Image (cartoon, rainbow, N blue to C red; front, side, top):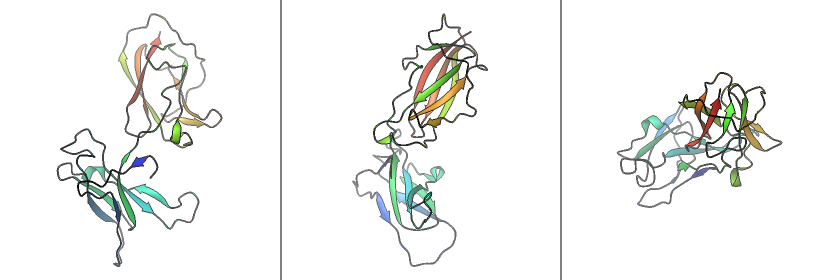
Amino acid sequence: PENFQAPPASGGFLTYFDIRTTATFTGSVTLSFSYDPTYFRSDQNPTGPDPMVKHYETGYTNPIDGSHWKDITVPALTDLVNHKVYGVTTSFSPFAIVKRLAYAWSGVLQPINTDGSSVFKRGSTIPVKFKLTGGDSAIANLNAKLYLSQSSSVDPVSTNEAVSNGSGDSGNTFRYDSTAQQYIFNLSTKDLAQGTWWLRIDLGDGQDHRVQIGLKK
């Protein structure tokens, strides 16, 4: 599956499965797979990536669904001690045990400095922008989100970034600008307090992308 990776079949742990049956059944079936505890998160590897069960679903005829890999993992059932990952499916065919790959991206773009030195006037609208790069550059439907948290209420000495008082975006989901081929969120600071703020950009790949900005009264 794109943006996912299966580990090598080592230590007796398989990573691909083709499950078939001649039985007739209705409803869903819960499947249990053993996974390599040295590769995925487990009691032996607490900081490893979470194992995921992907199921290759076939038989779709419309162009939107098509045949595709679907995440059927039930994270709450993952057994870190006995090294089992579970998935729920309504059909059998190929399955894979994988980890999510990090997206290749540009980092946050101007007018925000990546070193956290940007200070904006409170009340302005800040365009938070980034691009996907490399093999991910063609992805135009990423469900990226922006989260905010204040780390200090100290008023910065002076502003060093000039941004217009345009309209901000609602919600916290980035939109894709097909002309610039980048993702953008117009962050309104009208209701934010002065001080230092953390911006966390969640690309949905489990990576932690943060940058600091200052808001001057």
